Length: 232
Image 1: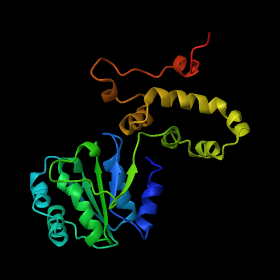
Image 2: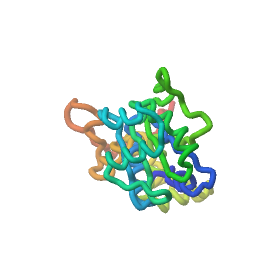
Image 3: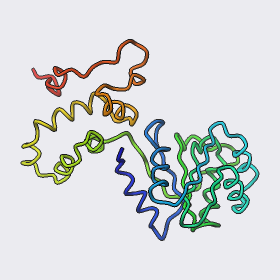
Image 4: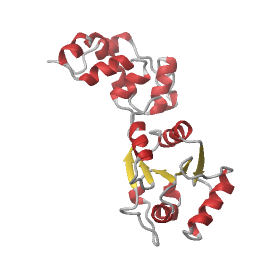
């Protein structure tokens, strides 16, 4: 699944003024997947740390911010040799370990050549006593649910999305018979990656999206042909 934020991650990777990256976003919007995909396709290897239910790694950061010691422990915990310019370090669910969030300041100051990223939810609420948000020492990006443009790509309509990107109203109007059903599908399915993936594979939304209330609803032809809004 193509996420358009990948281009901004590439810009971050190449920037000479790069700082540790924080990827913000609500739960289930694909932060972990995006960072791991970024690491797998743009780096030689990935050192991935998840602080959710990981007290051993959390205690490493609780002990202080000595960067060589932190890197040695991350290597031991992940089994990945961290090499400057070749390794993406991912600190996931960082809201569960506030001192890991604070450590980004020290990565910025003491190891500016490393590619260090962090992902978490509600990070603005995750600052506890004795820790602080590393203001001025990090770059930040926000990941949201799939946009309609990303939804078109996921549905195999990349060239149609490129036409929309051109912004020519005559061309867009010419393909309204294809665009309007896609827009209705997007309004019905939403932009959460799991729901979109399930819809792409099976033509119906994820059963998890609807909960245990019976059979998963079908997207009927009548729904696709209905007006987008009620008319008087």
